[in-house]
Length: 220
Length: 220
DNA sequence: CCTACCGATCGGTAGG
DNA sequence: CCTACCGATCGGTAGG
Image 1 (cartoon, rainbow over the protein chains, first blue to last red):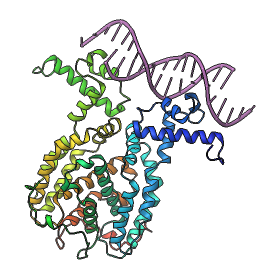
Image 2: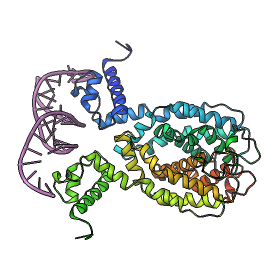
Image 3: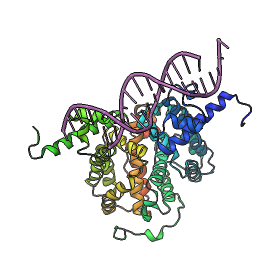
Image 4: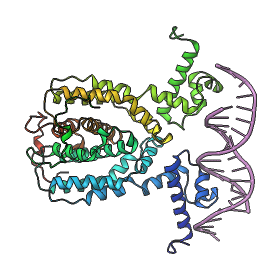
């Protein structure tokens, strides 16, 4: 029916991966049986093994095909900005936008960590490292003066800080008190920029007047 | 034999939890069977169900008993320092020290996320929130002037940044190129402090002379 | 707390 | 001789 350029076998394989991906996200790795995958892919259970040697094999194919960084790093590298500040702002926004609002990004990674003890993470890191270098290069090309911190460290901190923002946002989400959530992303960008740029530049953050001078937490 | 102050039932329950904890970390949730736990706890399979209603029940007891934040937040709050800078430095060190070098901290949390879709995270967050507030209070009491950023955001960024340091360290660990790893924690502290403190204070970071003026990545 | 089991389902494989 | 798939069943394990 669909995609007449592919063979029957290729289409079946694609159906299996699509079904597996959907169910891994919905029900987790062990919550999804080979029978579930077969049913949703429209074939018999035994037929799966003509395409994949094992359930683990299927997961790995899904993990690689829906690679978190397949969208995220290109999005970061597509960021625009004449100055370092503008570039960082846009990169953070692009990155969060690519991650989306769902937990999908995290779920496949968590499954990998739990079921396979993170054994594929180093290999994954190696494959995305060139893109990380490219991002570092782009960041340093912007106008503005960076403090004396190793560039790779700046990138590591960037990714870590905004992934942590994303994780708390999706995992705790609406349960965060308003004081921890309102304009949080803007503030994270602000802290990061102020942390990596030389003094006396204007980080131009949104006013946070109501917090000016707060020295205790009674208001919480 | 051991712990004569507890009843027989309490001792058995403790044995079950100890055996389960050890095996969950070693083999994962689904890699550990109730029979495995029973064997290592020295009782019959059926006997477990006199203490726990289900396998999930055992996991939750382990998850709560070996709560990541049971050690981590108290360690952060035990940090010392007259100035904000000194306090933050010590708090980061204490926190990383409490987390340790193993992946144990992460593993139980990842299992919770995968197997139970993070459904216990909000409740967990609620129970540790008072300690987070205390940490915020302690941070702001130190000498030094904070920039106009909401205090809860500062704490959220602190935890996020250093947890991300911990995660990359334990997960990618030795695979990180030296440029991303050397003195990384000191640099993270430096970036964070510079990001949250008003300008023209001396963040007194270790010299990073060899990186001074680096504007491209050719050396990588 | 044990022995002895249950209904069902698991991932994977048989021959054709 | 191939790719793609079937109905049936393998040895073991799941929570209870």
